[in-house]
Length: 198
Image 1: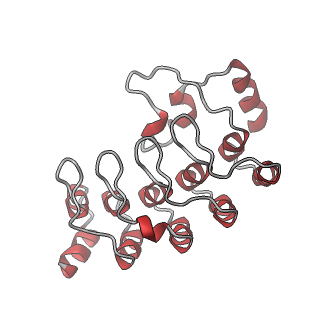
Image 2: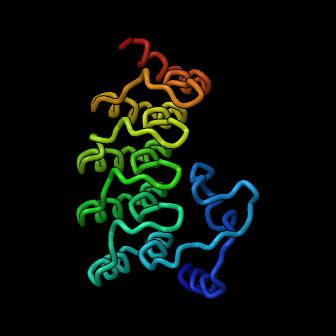
C-alpha cells in the first residue's frame, strides 16, 4: 500500500516537505523556511529507503545504482536509513561500501542523524565501518555528533562517542558545547559524566 501511494505521488513530480518528512524536525535539509513545495528525489534507491524495502534496495544496487548517490539536499541512502533507525538497511549499505562520513547540504553525517535519534546499534555499526574518523565533523551550525546525542539525552551514545575521541570542549557557531546542550535540556546523567572527566 505504501508503494502504491508513493508511486502515485511521484507521478505528480513533487511532494510537500511537511507531508513526507514532518516526522523528524531534525531533518532540516528536507525543509524550506517558507514551507514551499520542493521536488523530491526521483532516485529509485532513495524511494526504496523511504518505504524500507530491503529487497528492492538490494536489487537496485545489484543493477548498478550507486550506494553513495545524493539527492538535491545532499542526502544519501545511508543518511536516510540512519535517520529513520533502519538498522538492517544501514548494515546492508555499509557492507556494500556506503561512505559513512559523507555530509549533506546542511553538513550533517549519518553518525549525526543516528546520534540525534538515539539509534545506538546503528551508531556502533557506523563507527565499526569508519565513522569514528569523522566523530568531530561539524555541520553548518558547528554542531557535532556528541552535541546531538547530549542534547537529546542519549547517554550511552555519548559514552561511545567519548570512547572514540569526541571532543567535549568543541563549540558550535553559537558558542555551545555538548555540556551546554545537556545542561539546557536537564540531562543530569550526561552533565555528571562530562564533569567527571573534565
